[in-house]
Image (cartoon, rainbow, N blue to C red):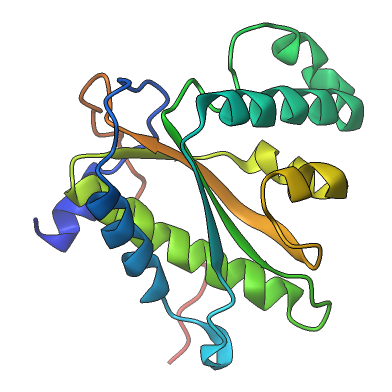
Length: 184
């Protein structure tokens, strides 16, 4: 698949079939993440892959509670038994990095670049993804992070769900680049 097709065709997917994802596909997607640009070639990303439906539900439930506490204006939206965090996706991937105040912003950006590679590779393989930013609220609960297998000195940087999309995603219109200034 051509790169432009992936870039322009990939959309956030929130409805998935329960068809399992082949381990080989996930390994290919994880490898694509490791080829992302990285500051000083530090390659800070570490991956947690979760297929366990009960654990994904637990992640969703705990995230909802943390978000309701931190952002009360979302409470009504999250007072539901429905999975409005991970959308019953068959897999959750957490891109994590070491807690290091000197490298915190660069680690976050490096992990985001890895995620973009992974999103594009997943799309190329016929899979859908969706960034789940609220899941990062789990960083405020170290005991819960340990349940997920995240080492004590690591944080979640980029959480996302992945699976086989239930429907074909349409292309959304995009604005032309807005160039504030072009210096020659």
